[in-house]
Structures are given as C-alpha cells and as structure tokens.
Length: 414
Ligand SMILES: *Cc1c(COP(=O)(O)O)cnc(C)c1O
Image (cartoon, rainbow, N blue to C red; front, side):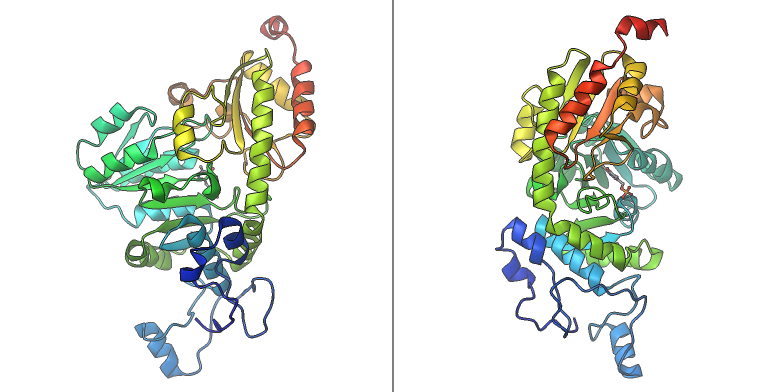
C-alpha cells in the first residue's frame, strides 16, 4: 500500500500482541506522508496511476494500487484491518449496512440446491433472507429452535451448506451454544455464520468457539452514537479473497469512506462505551426484576437467565440489552413506553442514548403472531437498549413510568 512507511503503522503481525483497548485506538492505521495523527479520510471514488503501464500492472494484480472505492479505499481498509485485529480474524470486508454484510456473506457462498439451517430467533431482515429470499433461488432453508441442541442435531444430520445464528438473539436475548452448533455444523459440511451484533466484538469471540464467518452491523455498538450505517464480514483470508471479495466487488454494497472514518473513531471508545453500557444494563435489569409490574426480565448477565451457565461460558459480559415483559400486556407496555422521559421510543439499539422498542408491533410485526409466540415475543415484551446515561437516571425514569401505570383492573376495563 502507498505510504505505509511510518514507524507507527500497526502491522498486523506485531499488532496481534496488543491488548484490545490499544488495538481499538491504533489498529490498522496507515499514515500518509503528512504524518496526520488521526485516521485520514479519503473521500474519493477513484484513484489515478503514474502511467498507463502502472494501471495495466494494477489490473493484472502485479502491483498493489487502489483502483476504485467500490472495491477498495484506504479509509475503509483501515477500518477492515482494525476490525480483523479486534476479532482475531484473518480478513475483513466492510459493507454499507449490517444487512448488506449478512446478505453478501450468504449469497456469495450459496447456490441453487444448497441447504441452509438457521436459528429461528433472528433479526427481522435476517429472518426474511432465510424464509423468503433464499428459497426464491432454489435454496432449501430450515429454522430450528436455537436453544435446543436436539433440534440442531436433527437438522444437521443431513448435508448443509451454511448455518446462520445470532446469540444473544434479538429481541428476547436467547443464546445459542455456538461451540456445540459449530461442531455439528462442520460435521454436516456447513460454514457457520455468527451474527455477533448483540454480544459486540468485546464480549464474545465466535472464532474461538468454532465459527467460520462473523458478521456485524457496525451501525450498532461499533459506531455506538447513532450516526451512520455500516456492516462487516470477517473470515478466513482464502474465503474472503476468493469468495466474498468478488461478490462485493461486482455487486457493490460498499461502505462510504466517510462512514468508515466515523466507525474508526467509534472504535476508539468501544471498550469504554460497552463496559459502561453493560454496567448500566445490569443495574437496570436488577431494578426491573425487583418490580411487581414486570413478569419476566431476560438479561444474560443475571443468574435467573434460563441459559445463564452458557452465558458464563461463552460471553465475558451480559451485554447492553435487556428484555422484559409487562404483566399487563400491550396496553401496559405502551403506557410505560409513553411515560418515559429519558429513554426514547426507537427501534434502533446500541446507541449512547437508551432506546426502548416494542418488538411485537415494530421490528417483529411482519413475522406474524404465530412465529412471535414461538419466539416468546409477547405483546407485553419490551426490548431496552441501555446507553451511556447515568444508570440511576435510567432507573428513576423506568420507576416513574412504572409508577404511572394504570392498575391492571383499569387496563382491563379500557
Ligand atoms: C441491526 C442489526 C442487523 C442489521 O444491520 P443494519 O446495519 O441495520 O443493516 C443485523 N443483525 C442484528 C442482530 C442487528 O441488530
């Protein structure tokens, strides 16, 4: 790469020995000749060559030179290197959104006649790709209950090309035993794609558990400040170069360099933000669990989470999301959300601002009542993404909103 001459550039080999917080600040930096401190923002669509001969040699692959930002841009590459170092992946390619990452990771690999198995509890658009898009191309798809190893055993007893899972899942924070599923998937011939958004790159390391491919919506904690959309696919060098890269290069879900630059700046504070939001989420979960209006609190960091032992094994923290269920159903959930002053009603997550979602009527409306029932998404369920406010203020906000709830009898009379 041009200008990779600074003695402060982080070459991937030596960077592997650095600790996470340091990698998040320095990983992947390539300084220009100007010696800028911060990551340079290359807002350019194309690149020029010294000569026609250099252009020819570039296209032949004989020299390394950026060609066109659809398939390579120095700011985007800095982000890809930083993400790969953080994840412990051989390679990474970024995309314009998290959904572009999931879509590219699957479609670059799959072909007609293949079989895909996915955990049922998926982000809404991931669910659509599995249930609606892939079958259009003659790909057989099957959902399993992600927490049920016997169901995985059965589904993976026949050959399979790819497995997609999310853990913890959106919105009810159900876990999948990633290592156990990877073992079974590999025996069936499948590559395992883990959507690691809810765990963040800090709290769960899918590659260490056997995953082949990890995908992120960088829109969430990696930006973490609600500013831009972005996505990433991480995997082995050979697969990324030979299978994923041609797909991205030719179909064009590329990340804007400006967004890549914001994501690089977001990564600098990722440990600080995720640790603070986790502490806030744990405090909020404990508070909610103490309230009589709440039927059920789901937080992987609490001992009463149904898969707490698994959470302890495969995650190093409970995460920044809490799901809970109001005993009074949809009316109580709406009344509570409408009474919140600090926590905003939004379907986004992983923001510095705390956000509350009613999945049954928003993010998971389209999957239908039957599928929601299977996923345990009741009409009283709320998903709370905990941000960076003082947890005591969030607890006050939730407490006031709960205190204002009409009694159940009044709700029933409405
Ligand atoms: C948000 C999200 C996505 C999609 O990411 P976008 O950046 O919105 O396209 C995929 N999976 C999970 C778990 C998410 O939370």
